[in-house]
Image 1 (cartoon, helix red, strand yellow):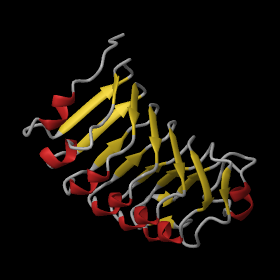
Image 2 (cartoon, helix red, strand yellow):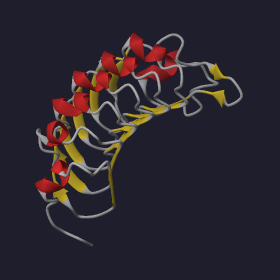
Image 3 (cartoon, one colour):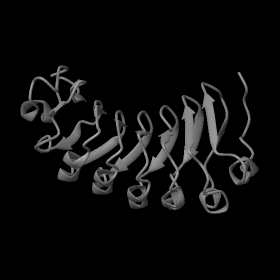
Length: 188
């Protein structure tokens, strides 16, 4: 039940590479300068708290970033296109926020991505075909985005050697369900 604002100085500590904050009442945001003064971040997990603001475009400076989960907060705006520079990302989740706009095609540059969580935001338009390039992807969460249209990009639903089928999570009434192959979209 810790209720306070996370001090901005935390983001600027040069030796800090990882932060995990889980189910608190902490609030505040990620300052735009955070990823300029400290480009050494490898893991940022702010889960089910009260953080808000937008994701700084300087996220592209984080060449070592492997995990970025801000699920269940109050983040707004869009995902900056600079996210495509974070090529080591294996986990990226922005679900349950108020992020809006089109899903950026630059996510398709993140070929190490295993999990992509975009659920419960305000996405609209078609999914970028570039998402089919995510060769390591095992799971994508898209439920709760009723304004997504079009089709699941060809090639997203595939069998991953030795592991199984890529899972694509949608709501049953999603317009994308009609175009999603059943082995991948078990929710449809």
